[in-house]
Length: 401
Image 1: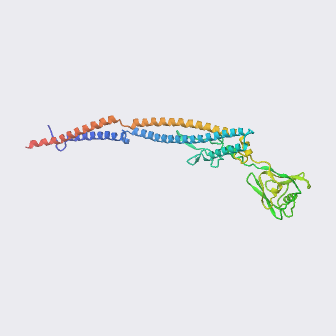
Image 2 (image 1 turned 135 degrees about the horizontal axis):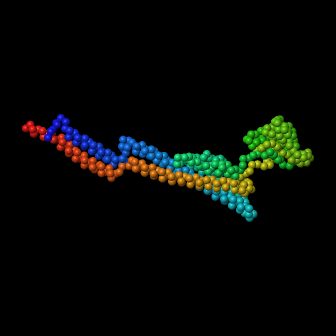
Image 3 (image 1 turned 180 degrees about the vertical axis):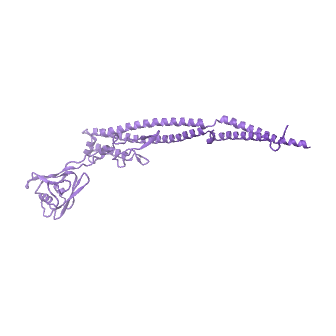
């Protein structure tokens, strides 16, 4: 038997074996501690890359699933609001039918309709989530911008409140009445031109306002005027006023004139011009009031009008806005179905991707426990063998006794 003291090859081999056993044991113990079989890129480069991509995809899908939950809440809130509006519109229709019974109190019915219309207006203005309007702008007159949610990797638009479906503008018109388009004629009462008036020696200002928001004024000198016929003459003589051509008195308001005039009898007078929304005396003697000008017609009034007959007239036909509300509700139903479908897909995709990641990265706990136990035993044996092989060269000393 030969001995090499300078280099104990047997001991070195035992040490290397011990180091290898300890490394495998540590790897098994780390996998048990982390419950993953890939704890670094070196463990499995391909598996690490695939699992990292899948985990990123899972995070995106979970975010999209949260978006689906928000979209569902958005739709549910809007659906509840529109169902309330639909219910109140049905009540308004029933109230109008009641008003056709001569034994019923039409004034009370109009008040009920006005109240219901006010509730509809409030719902349109106040249905929101976290400050985001769902049905209409805060003034209840225009549609909201269409929100979108990323669900299932594509943009999902909530378009039920658009003009082609709910059409908030049409509802607002029915509630509040149409914007005043103005009239082309302001008819005065039939008067006796010789009726005495006492405007005094002053300047009265007549103001005409038009549907486009512009206005113009006419300064009328009432000095020496003693009759309604004199008022007409004072208007005709006002600086800048040119009867029947409108070249000066703005917007083509070309005439405050009279027909079948008889100085000793009655006369009908009229103010003529395009889209006049108001005709008033803003200062001085009230010429417009004295001549009895009233508007011949105006923009349609709505369900919230202060006049009972106007309210009942507006309630006579609400089929258009009722159909719009039903159409919007139908669209919400379709959108909800789509959200549910995409939610189911995302839930399934997350489960499948999670299973794939688990198959790539999760440690086999029973197998790793066996490896750890095996390694512990092997480490103890290798340590004992290393110790014995380190003491073997000492036997050489017996040769020198």
